Length: 102
Image (cartoon, rainbow, N blue to C red; front, side):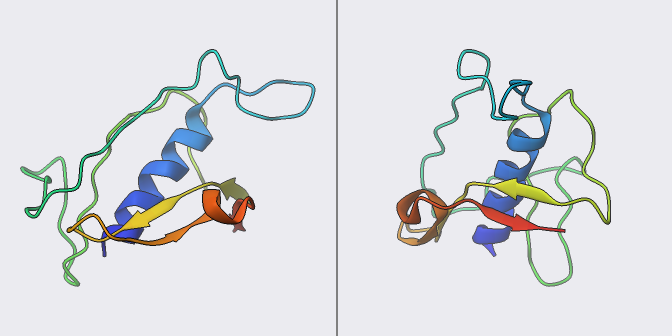
């Protein structure tokens, strides 16, 4: 569950960060840096963070200003999935290969 929330955050950061027109990579000087500390309790509160029926919690840590991700468009992201106790269970950073999907 946390994996999907972390993935959603990373996707949002990737999509909304400014891109270098030469190689379409995020600009290092303008990409925000986010550190999320592991927590035993969910950090989502209020209606701004909807809870889905399957207990998935969506949290927008950083709201971007770029184009919104839309159905049918391919996006490529790096992510790190952790459990609420801080245990990492998957990471595209560790593999050195970002994840792409439509």
